[in-house]
Image (tube, rainbow, N blue to C red):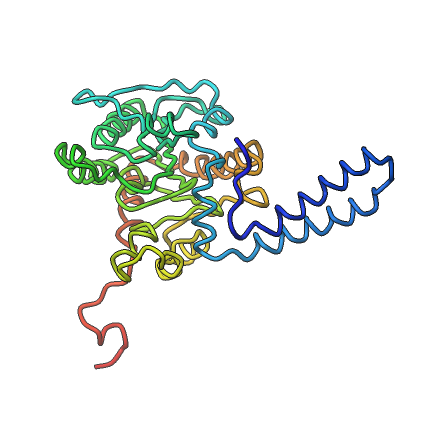
Length: 327
């Protein structure tokens, strides 16, 4: 895949081009330009650090959607090489936008479920561009129930702009499928860890996102709606997506501050798409830590803790005076 340049990455791409041009010039002319190349490389490192240490919410959304970013199968292949995919919801069909099956992670049997996008047009059509349909959520629930019976932890990888809103999806009751998953995930008695690895959009994310721990990668986002969808509703124009991203407070740091995310998984500098192996190593390290902690808890504690975690989200009051302290 050719390198995709995001708009804010222009200075980085320009420096890389200059380095390549100097190196080619050195080869063809026989002139030593080592000092100039090293100076440009040093400037490149500084530029990359400066840009990626101060990203706006909208820029993080753009990185979360980068076509070269690791997807669920990329992490599975690196962390769980014995993964065995199971297919079908036993009702209608098999949704390729959600994959799942048993595997071994860090020496422990687990059930892995995740949303999957495609790398090119053919694969994206096959995966429905990562938009799950009702049968995908019903397949996920079947696998979660199987894991619950087998007493093995569940790990979900979330990377979707949302559940598929097409006519067929509505005819097969997408809202009901997601709602049933929410209810049933609260009743699971095994550890459940949910990891937002890219996009965490709307009910498409929450349909496999009820966990004892919610982890989010550094440049991923988690929101009730995509910035474009929010902009279309509030400003009647998708061009206001950057402003919507600011208002939605969807970044990893903000979500941790609000108590929604339990941990932020660091990414290689420049984003997970720059180094899939390192991104998987960082994710696996954080995942192993939380899984070890949860596996020490009994089933009643796991179930009650998951319920209380989600009940604690938000701030509720009977009237405005309760929020201000006024009588």
